[in-house]
Amino acid sequence: SAGGPRQDPRRVRVRQRVSLSHVGVIAKTVTPGSPVTIELADPKTKETVDVLEVDACLVATGRIPATKNVGLDSLAIETDRRGFIPVDDRLAVLRDGEPVPHLWAIGDATGKMMLAHAASAQGIVAVENICHRDRTVDYRSIPAAAFTHPEISFVGLTEPAAKELASSGEFEIGIVRSYFKANSKALAEGESDGLAKVIYRKDTGEILGVHIIGIHASDLVQEAANAIAQGHTVSDLSFLVHTHPTLSEVLDEAFKRAVVTA
Image 1 (cartoon, rainbow, N blue to C red):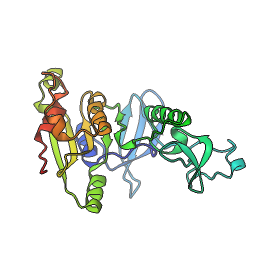
Image 2 (cartoon, helix red, strand yellow):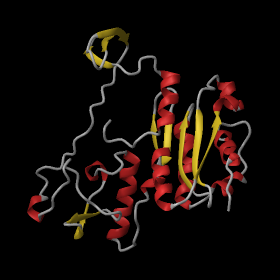
Image 3 (cartoon, rainbow, N blue to C red):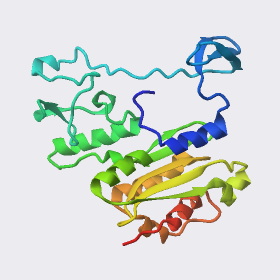
Image 4 (tube, helix red, strand yellow):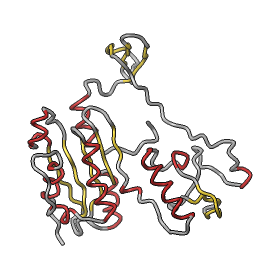
């Protein structure tokens, strides 16, 4: 979907290697039925290169916010060019860049992270602020997952985004990887494809992003999300004990490989 969080390039490449056999082509036609028939074509010549027969086909075309005719005009509030309602990190609706008193917005209509759990977090923050308990949303600590096979999950920055931040902040990033093929539980499950990547600041150990592809990746990412939210460094996490044999050791191995220079 066009509205989902951006995926890290390396994780995409691994997913393609593990799961996909048709990359760099377009679906020319999709014919419903049993089976569903997909005609694949070269994106430049539009000539058919293959025909697939599958049980089901998911077509993701993006999302459009349903923010018209909800009364924003009466308050002189303008949505952005895509139709999303502008809000600050306290979820107050903005008019000309300034919060509108007693007006709040949460969920997909804000165009932030269009995920159910992100909307829930936004709702909690909005209520806290309505009750005069100041709180903001930390989007970098909100995880996301794709329930494919194998699963994909991530939290924080992608590698390109982390490198851009590092260049502007004049610090160096470190990247460590660990692999499911070296994990006892993954081998026992017969699901050894996948990896975990941790991106961090070399000078402080601050975790900037974590990306996982593999069995139960959607569950494993929560440890990293909580660490980012609570400000724990890779050094902090490297001393935590993980149960053996479990999939959690995939991240444990990555944390232990990180080298902090400070």
